[in-house]
Length: 170
Image 1 (cartoon, rainbow, N blue to C red):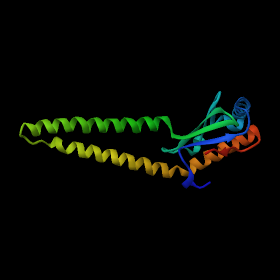
Image 2 (cartoon, one colour; image 1 turned 180 degrees about the vertical axis):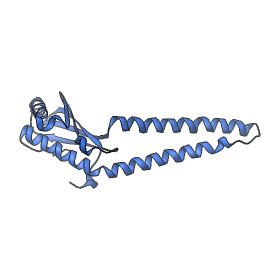
Image 3 (cartoon, one colour; image 1 turned 90 degrees about the vertical axis):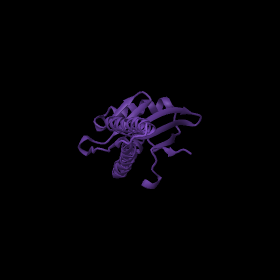
């Protein structure tokens, strides 16, 4: 599979009943081979990169099973680790907060006919937001290999659980 076709969210299909896929998937996830890199909770599972390979932008793959007319739909989503996601959003919100209130203050000072250095803060905060966005894109590119590995683990999981790899659903 080419990384060009890799998307953060995807849907797969298995022509087996959801209850059967769920049962077999959780049995496989409890085995020693999967126990250190995966979690299973009913119709939900997470696949992780081994701890020895974790980098700052390392993703995880969450899988959710749902019944379908023709069997089971598997919704997959790549996401950053929770602590990274939380930090990034805190910084985004902080920079937005700073830009907003510095803009109000600079406008107030300007309306009074005076000048202040506070007019420089909003553009700097916006540059910080842009810089954070660029850094996250670079991090995503650096973790492409791990996304491919997790996607291959997903296919291997269902191959072991139900004896077949899922097909891409459009």
